[in-house]
Amino acid sequence: MAGPKNEAISVEKSSTVKSRLPVLIVAVGRGRVGKTTFLNIVGQRFRERGARLEIWNVDPHGESGSIDAFFPDVRRPGYSGIDDRRGWLERAIEEQSASRHDVLLDVGGGDLVLQTMLHDLDLSTIAETMGVRVVIAQLLGPIVADIDHFDASLLGSGVNGNGGKVEMLFVMNGGLIRGDTSPLKAFEPLFASPPIIEAMAKGAAVTMLPQLRCLDAVLERGLTFRDASDRKTPAGVAPLSIFDVSRVYKWWTEGLDTMFSRIPADWLPYVETESDIAEAS
Picture 1 (cartoon, rainbow, N blue to C red):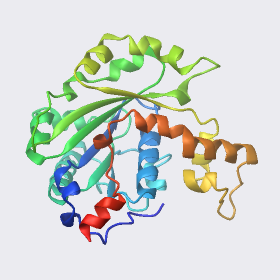
Picture 2: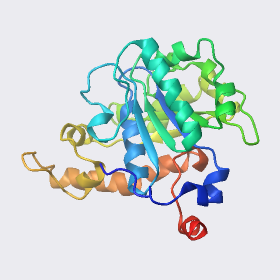
Picture 3: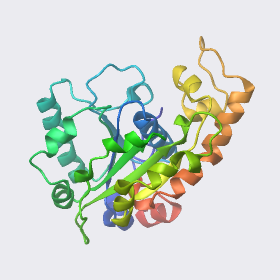
Picture 4: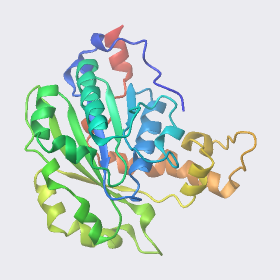
């Protein structure tokens, strides 16, 4: 996957970039609910559009299915101890505060690095002090017990002005639905659960990650979604069927639009528009 395309354009020249908060998108939830897949989708989509975006991985476990396989410039600590990783993450966030770039953070299923980091910290205060918008993306499958992994303490009251904010985004993973149940029916019990109702009353957003039936086939081949939709396959890798290529193309070019449309634009990585480029020139 290619790195950021717009490094040569000075961020300091654009008042639009100056006025917006850089985002730190953290995917959380139990194991195997699609946290890394969600970050992979966001990273590929926004880098493809020229976003100045860093990707961090503090997951101490093996790299099978890791986000590292799709982005050659992933930053990660060179050690696995929880205190060391917490220290690395805190220093990296300080760097983000200074550089103002957007970040995707993969912490791994069941990892305690965030809980350890926040044990004696208030995330809202940190976000305000650093001037960073922290977006907690809670991945959920259609199992009511998944909501048990939602940590309401991550939510802050948020602040206005030039300080940062903490935002909550619930991502219902339609790819985990079994059978022919419709997504709305499958996730109905979660939408009605008190934790989600309370979080939405505080400004949380909810979106749906649409199912891609051949997702595993794409990931196992190490293909980017763009290459898969364009039927580009490296030598020695079994090509996708023409039917799966069509599925990926429709999902990548159309299906994900609804998911992203339900996420506030300023919770997502920044993509420079033509008007921003004109202002910076």
